[in-house]
Length: 227
Image 1 (cartoon, rainbow, N blue to C red):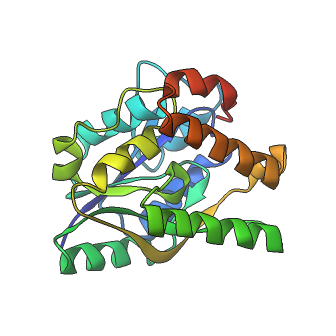
Image 2: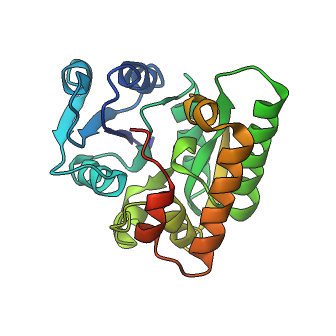
């Protein structure tokens, strides 16, 4: 059976990180790494209780996740944001699917936003269709990838923003990409702060600009860092 390493990039996530770590253990991750980007709260002390803590020289999910990948020993790397929690059957379903299909190189999970309401259910469905049809998964869908493929494509690109979308565009050329039918619990905090419509429109405007060749590093200024 394949082994799975969970990598959680964090920055000032003392409130959320314990639940993310616990969900990875409950789902039977073979190892769990938390990569801190310079937190000024109690994130580090919380994280080191139940995970292997790594400290990156600076913040930035791309660099933090790449650092975690260099220490991971699993056959599959699963990148979990601190405000997301795996379902107890998530890693089992991932292993079964990838074991059965060697051409499956990467994928993500199906989101379940932790707030009631029709608008959130529509958002979940839209995010699912984006990942399932276009193979464009975001980091808050818990991207996973075979380690050998991840290393072969050069890991996450060294950018300040959109590292998730950029690597997915590369991975879908390497083999099959699929959404695992296991709910990933996702915090609604970013939509609550900015509004569902405003956040969604902003996301698609930024994606369109990136598709037209605008630098992700330049676009990062239009996406406030919640971490």
